[in-house]
Image (tube, rainbow, N blue to C red; front, side, top):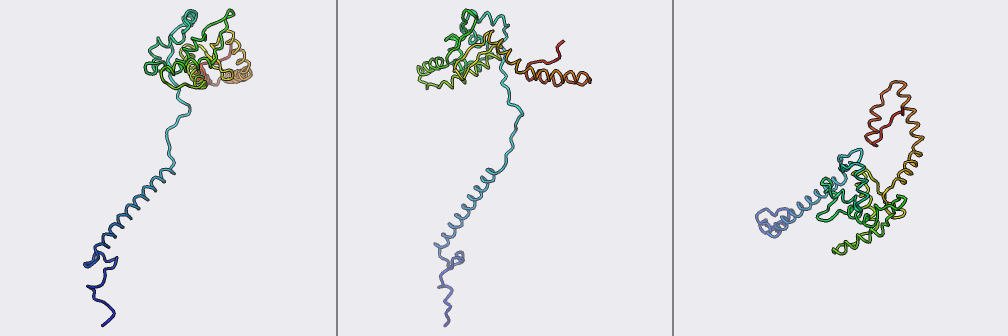
Length: 252
């Protein structure tokens, strides 16, 4: 009689769970363990995929310069605009309101957009008015903000900060310049806004020409050199005209 027992009475080993005589509970446990291991492997694989995409360098389309907003021009002559400014305290806003092409920027739902709202209130507070010497006035952005906030709170909306109204006026200034060729200037240092009048315009031109005079002289010298050699410069001048709106050439 040896130490080996009868095979029929030996307990089934864990690795022999599929043999006849194996314990059913042990078999179920192994199946469950296999499922858990498979789930663990799938989870690890997904984490690996996520980590791969997190580390992967992604290339997206870019452009050299930001896209320019294509704001439309309001087809009014300078004399028509000047006459409108004399008789209409809301001349700028009303010109935008009358232009169907500007509707996407003028309206937000059934209300004025934030830039037009700030512009309209600035006009209400005297933006377009001139004194006896034909000078326009500085309108405090604090006053514009207070009026905007009264309007907002009357409609159950949250008030906004002065810096927000300053940003709205900057947008309105862009609208006015592109559509009409006029200039309103929000000034952050003083937190005021004003319509540029003739005296201010002349002062600005003097200042900017003085700053550019040396560079313009250098440009003229190089144009004369190119002309002396009969070298082509048209493509450069055309690009400058396209980018700046200024056409440069030797004076006659």
